[in-house]
View (tube, rainbow, N blue to C red):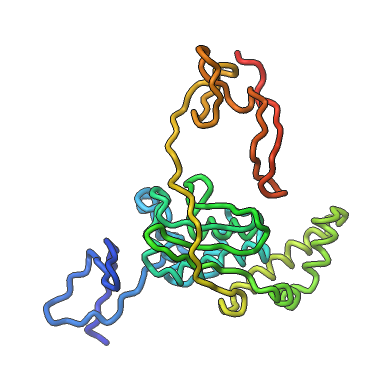
Length: 294
């Protein structure tokens, strides 16, 4: 093996099973022994300059390297804590992206070509947003308020998407990993009656369950199925206008015409709106969030 050399190459494109790369310049007749995705180390070798060009490099490299631990930690940076739900979201995303193929990772959230259709607004959804890069803000995350711990990954140029749903027996696995998790969940979170010590133990149990969950095989946690989902249209590009009443900038698509005076926002018009909160997607009557215009 003394004649082996290593090189870091950049993926330029993918066509079928053919990778187009740059930075690989072997001598004539030499053998490319292996081509593996490079993952940045824990030493923080991903520089600010690299992240300025490809902000999701750490996530993509960790997915390619199947680094579940790092992905769970990075997802928890967004979610705020460890729990079985965030771990399941991370694992479901790894499972779904692997099923779609490597081309699903060449995604920057701009063109909405990769969509994640989640069916629950809970911890699971944050794991999906972190690992897949499909978020509410880049219009690549679709919430269908069904209450199922499931997600469908689909690319717009394909007819079929891969639905990944959690098996019912996942709770048994959580209990084996962290026996006190569910009793403390009931006491600390649901009833809000736990002590400060209970909260400390609950967080430790949740962390123990999360890091245990990522050690399982996908088949132990999920059922996968190829389906033909109904996809939303591309997000419309709506200009900002100034509300004639509160004088705040607002999307033109979220206003009501007011004759010659222009348009007013839904808040000033007192219109009921759809709101995503802990209950899911609900209709909500609101009052303007602002005071009098100054």
